[in-house]
Each structure stands twice: as C-alpha cells, then as structure tokens.
Length: 597
Ligand SMILES: C[C@H](O)[C@@H](O)[C@@H](O)C(=O)CO
Ligand SMILES: [Mn+2]
Image 1: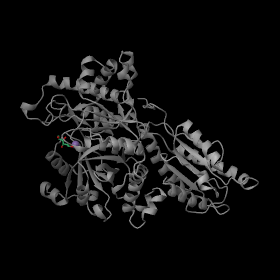
Image 2 (image 1 turned 90 degrees about the horizontal axis):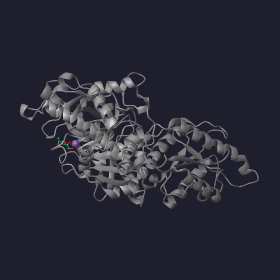
Image 3 (image 1 turned 90 degrees about the vertical axis):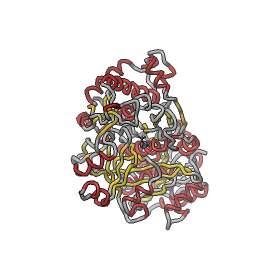
Image 4 (image 1 turned 180 degrees about the vertical axis):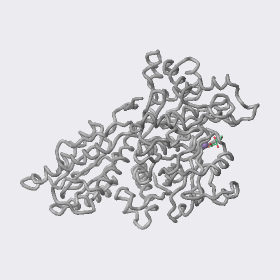
C-alpha cells in the first residue's frame, strides 16, 4: 500500500503569510531592525512548515512578505503578494515598536495573529498592545502572542509557550482557510425528521464560507444501472472486500434473514455505492475517459452526508459500507486521507467531523449519543461494578450502522497504546488490524433493504474529544465539547449492555473528564446537556483547538471542559468581560457575527 498525498479539491491549498513588521524610521532605527525582524519571520516560517501539515499530508507552505513592513505602502505590497500566492492565514512578527494602523493586516476574513517579541532593547510588547487596540477599534479581531519570559534582542529561539500559541493559532486558521470555497454535499435529504439534516445554507455560507450541493439518492440508481463508475476499480474493490471484510452473524429472525444470494448481491451494490459516493464528492477522471465528463468533475465536496433512512434503506442496502470505508484511512486503493461523510446526512455532525478532521488530520468517529449507564444501572442489569475510569458511569456511543474502522483503535502509538493516527503514519499492518477487528453484520430489521453494518468495540485508554455543532434559533450555531477517554468494559459487562441495544453496531464507551463544574460535575449531566442525538469524536484532547477555531468562525462554545490555560481566543474577547469567559464568548460572537457577511 502506498500512501497517497493528493489535493482532492479545486484550487490550491491555503498558505500562511508572514509579515515582518518594524519601525519605519530610517537613519539608524529601521536599519538596526531589518535583519532581526526578517530572522523572526524566517524562524516562524520554518517552525510552521516543519510542524504543520494539511489533512492530505502535504506540508504547509509559508510565504514571507518581500520586504519588512514599516508603513502602509509595504503593508499593501504584502497584501498583494498574499493575494497572489493564495495566503489564507496571516502572522505578523516584530521585535520593536511600529505604527499600528499603518502596518497591521486589515483583511477582515483572514485569521490573524501578531507575535510581539518579549524583549527590553525595543518595545515589541508596546506594538503588540497598540496593534491589538487598533484591531479592536476597527472590529477586526486578532490573536496576540507574547512570550512569558524576556529574551535578548537577536535571540532566534521560539520559546515553547510562543511555539504552542503559534501552532494553535495557525492550525485553526488553516482550517478556516481550507473550508472556504468548498462544498458540503447532501446525498439525499432529511432522514427521519432529524432537523440537522436540513442543510442550513446561511450557516454554511456565512459562517464557514462554504456552498451547499445536493444530489437525490436516485443518482446512485442511475449510476449503478448505467454503469457510471470505474469497472476495473469496482472489480478490484469487490475482490478486496471479499478478502478483507468478514461477514458476521445474522441476528435477524428467520423470516427477515436475507438469502445468501441476496447478501452476495448486497455486497456488490454497497461496493458500487462507495465508489459512486466518492465520485459524487470529488469527481473521477476515469469517468471522463468513459464519456461522462460532467460526472467526472464531482462537487468539490470536503464533506458529505448520506440520508439512507428511510427513503433508500427501505428498499436498498444501507450506506454503512460507503460511510465506514470512506471515513477510514484506507480502502482497496491503499492508505489515504479519510473522507468526512455523515450518517443520516446529519449536516451539523458532518461539520463537527470536518472541524475535527482538519485539526487532528485523522479519521473521525460518527456516533449516536445513545445511553448513559450509571454505576447503579450497570449493577442492576449485570450484577457487576464499574471500575477505573468508568467508575462514575459511561456514555454508550454507538452509531446505528457504521463508523470509521480507524476507531477500532488497532493502530499503535510509539508506546504501544491504542491510537487513531494521521493516515501518513499508519502502517499496512495497522490498517489490516483495523479490518480484522471489524465484523460486517447483516443489517437488522430497521433496514428492510439489507446491507452490512460494522461491529467493533473501540479500544480503551484513548484520549478523545466528543463535540457537536448545534443550530439554535435566536443564537445561531453553538459548539459543545467534552474531552475524555475511551474505556473498555469487562466482557461480562460489555456483552450484556451491548446486546440490550444492537450488537451489530460499533460501540465506543466514553467517559468525559469531570471537573466539578456545570455539566462536567458528573457523567450523567454531560449526557443530559448534549444538544442532539449525534456527536463527532476526534482522537486526542483537541478541545482547545476547537475553541480557537470556533472563535475565528464566531461560533460560541456553550459547554466545554478544557482547562483555562489552554484557551486561546482573539484578544478582543477580553473586552467582553474577563470574569465570565463563556458569557464573553457569546457577546463577542454576537457582536462580530459570522466571518463572511
Ligand atoms: C435505526 C434507527 O432508525 C437509528 O438510525 C436512529 O436511532 C438514529 O440513529 C437516529 O439518529
Ligand atoms: Mn443516528
């Protein structure tokens, strides 16, 4: 398996623009700053190029302004260069005093940060503070980066606290820039009256800079019947599926069991559906060779959802295979970037998955937030005690169908612990282990058209972040975040709880980190405060990055358990109140409104 680094979308990948800003006074001052300022820019560019990658595995490119910026003419030249080069993120750096309104970046839709060097020879901090007040006065929020400890002028090291902020800012800002101009593709429409399946166009357009595309699910029928898919790839994919996707027990009563012949037909259909869904999202040059130029172009979709229930699943096999395989880091073509595809066309869970995917560069878990199991309830039905991380109760995340196979947790971190990795770190053996840990179980009675869902249990001990964007009338979008851990329950507990629901579906047992505050006072309250039936889960504790990203998009965070010291928002947020950061976030997002007007 070769790892594939490709840009799937039209247009180039966004770059980070670095702006070396200085005091423009010639005749000694400017000259003394030229070199040291340019060096700061270069070291930031080097750091970001080394440490950040796009979700497709390609390194992030930085563009440094051609000259240092001492005044408005040079600021305009830098802006022009950035436009030409496709810059979507801007970072200004300075070790000195400069003239704020003459030098700042004023493009309102490009997320921006300023690193003011903490030194004594020249007042970088004075510029930083004055520039932030200029940004705030103009209504163009920016992030302030100021090192904790004084450094000597000319010291090229980026201290760990500055590095951390640069990376947190740049990662989130790149996500903002990556979303812009891409599409969300609804394959089908509203599933079973779930409101978040309604693609809210003003939300996509104004908050994310995205467009909405739609295809009816009959398009799958047309492409299957007319053979509008790559036949060679189909044969390869079907054989690979036979070799790697193990069929599990059929738990349907005899009168609902599909015959062997029907099941064999279902496998063929679902493999075709996976090819077609991908082609609908990003196109496929093979289709052009076959005479289908329009179909070959795709929809430039960075995320999609498949309605399935019930218009499709009452008659055809479920979309579980397409959802599971596309959202995994590998398929019959090898190891590759996972796609973002939401079950039930839950557009808001897709957006949450998209955030997680751009921030962690790894596969996302789509799940129903299905059951809170208290220690008492577990004792009552199993006679056993929950222990360890699970001792205060657990949340059963279980999608009614599929989930990304990466979430079996079969990949291993350096210390051997289970993990979900960026695809370029995944080995062939790990991809195989994920496949081996998954059973494809014939769909149950909800799904009259058959199909196969993914049955696995996620490995315990993984740091994970559960999140969800909700739309609330009168507010707009809000984001909720719960950092925690996956846990494994002993077999004599797991089996009983799993069988009470639907054993053919993928289970992730999740325990949020409790901190005694608000909904995080206990596990029950986290479940009780969840704003919808679904969540998206990322590997790792990326709540702080989600908060930074949300602030850039002006989406207030209504619930989180991220420690205060990891929170990084534009400095303007302080002006909305410092003793109640959650209220300040709402007020700031309300005042600034969506990023794209
Ligand atoms: C099978 C059921 O219809 C499920 O799909 C339902 O519980 C959901 O997942 C709703 O999000
Ligand atoms: Mn669901």
